[in-house]
Length: 232
Ligand SMILES: *Cc1c(COP(=O)(O)O)cnc(C)c1O
Image 1: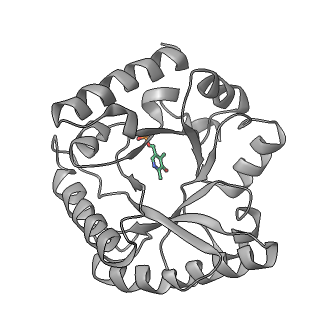
Image 2: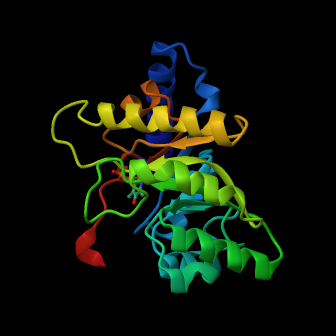
């Protein structure tokens, strides 16, 4: 299957999932998670109408940027971001999806301030409260969202999550529903319902995420094929 055919199939699945719960498929953005796929693959996805591309690693993103991989589509940063790499991402990407600590919030704000811009971000929530994962703990999220409001060079557009790896079918659903509830509360109480992005769902569970309210899904292998970790 080609990237183009894969995207067409994912779009069909998105539409079916949205319609099954009475939602408009047009309100769901498809982000191609393009890590470990080359510039040509990124361009093929853009030609096939992907809504945005998301990268995980700063170095890989910078290299592919230099090759013109993302021309014609918004670029998101979706991976774990180290503080010392913030300046290579702020102002370069349209959305940093993975801001998951107070330190990172402050660093992004500081860096955006120096560049004289406002950086769009999502707050990442570690909904499974996993030790090894980044993101705000659910009970810390409200305070973080409140603190972020006072940072002049950041604009919070919503929430992002990566739930624990599930082996049972539909195992992610309870996590998605919890994040959706946090999104609704924080959006209403702190952000005048100005949020636009609830980013959740990957190749194995994006339809469940949409049924639970996602407005943005990040799909990698179902579009680009299995990643070849042996090559890296
Ligand atoms: C790789 C990745 C995805 C996509 O994963 P697939 O299972 O290949 O769809 C989504 N989100 C993030 C943050 C990722 O790193």
